[in-house]
Length: 136
Image (cartoon, rainbow, N blue to C red):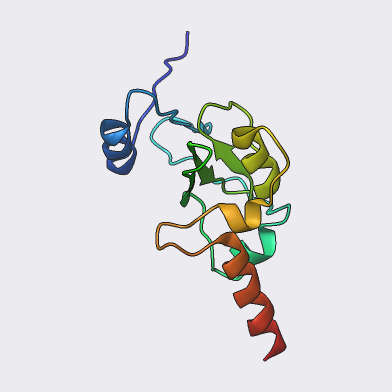
């Protein structure tokens, strides 16, 4: 019978150690053979975040957050390698910022202006920067 082993790099172990008790941690597994490193499958960027990611303005693994004090709502999502968003507490990724925001708020909302990067910028600001760069 083949042996099954899972190896986590130090960055994953560090992330798991920092995770809070209510935080969802998503792990993607790839197949490899023995001591050979697994071949990375090509990632096809899709959806509304694809152009921003291709331009290098947004990276997979980026944590996005929002806070609506009046409604006492907070949200956290992680950008996937293919340009989707995994929202804490949800097992399936969302294809757009607005769908991801709606999953947290319970109603339709503009996720482009709601989600913030760690530096405070919104996804809408990234989209505008990409448009401005394209005009030059």
